[in-house]
Figure: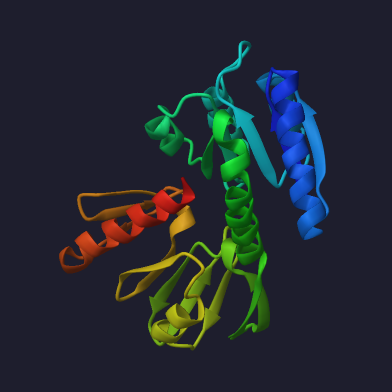
Length: 236
């Protein structure tokens, strides 16, 4: 698992790296740690397409602040966990905008780091889990995180990924149960949506990250917004 640590303070990089190495030794995961002393240096790596599984990003950097870096990373990598590290806990709203996975306060790193890593590693394992679906096209092994939504069409359901669609006769209720715990939300009798791909819910309309808009019935609207808000809160 590849971890990027970006901070313009060498001592803070060393402290965070020590915590990561200790966590790795305890849990035997196999981390590879890359250090970046500026946001522009990290962005160059991301733009070059190099794989990064977790990013620890200092907010208060001189050349380019961490929130600006996170925003640009989101344009390249939609789902990589970004942990914002700061000396001040007053960036919650901005962190929401860039979909930060966690905040860590520098003075509390020792107290909060293990819980943070437990949660993020757990989410990564969950997202990478492969589920077998008995589709019309055959037995398909799909990552839950790759599924954008499942939509009812006639007597079948359509499992929609970014570039592929598979047909399945399993009822939507059964698929909802199968994907329980993977961040899916029943927004409509005909739609089961991966909340990681939702970009907004307003005026009874849900917008996905590919720009597609889905109707949310008035009877479900309040519950859908509440569940999505809770999901986003966990991501933060």
